[in-house]
Length: 266
Image: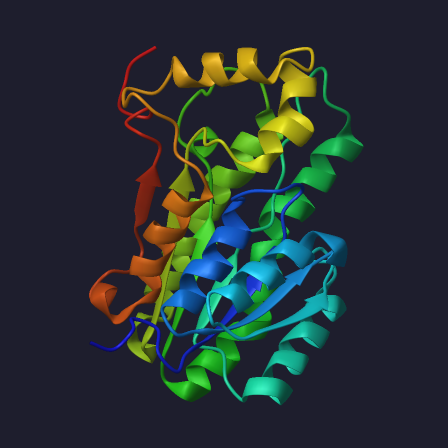
């Protein structure tokens, strides 16, 4: 039985992780490699890629890496060029860069709001700008954008810019999906919920639970109907389906990976 991404090339924006374990980008790089895809993984901190590289190679996969600042058009253009020079095509684009900042309209500075827009939303616009012409020339391609349940519901704290930009990612994906459907390009979104990724230990616990990781995990689990918390591997499996030919008739939609949290009231 052939692997689901055999012979394909995947460009992953944000393939590293802030700490050990299964971040979304790392998990997707490994899972896609297991299914036969060559990985071109980028991050703005190449040290975060070390474990990703090790895990991809341990899975028998092939990976090339490069620095990229996804808020800068030229940086993205350079990465796309490097990927094309190495592999000659881009079959799958994964936009996995993003981050949250606390605050509503009064508390948040205009500078932070603008940075959130650039980081979470404009980055998707820019990567699509540079990759879509390549996929159009190929006559095929799949784009998977990472959103968040914060883009579809209240998730426990005011983060107005993050919520707005992730909602924007979902709608941007729909628009691009319809515009490019006749070109053989599919565009979908994965909407992860409150997963246990390395971000919990490295950043979120300090921001929201006084550094108490166990307390934060308990708070997050209380919002999830399923009796356990997912991690980046769950995101990766959803993205894998959307990247594969199994999803050939799926475009302009979302897969929510949150253990039922977005359905539950309260």
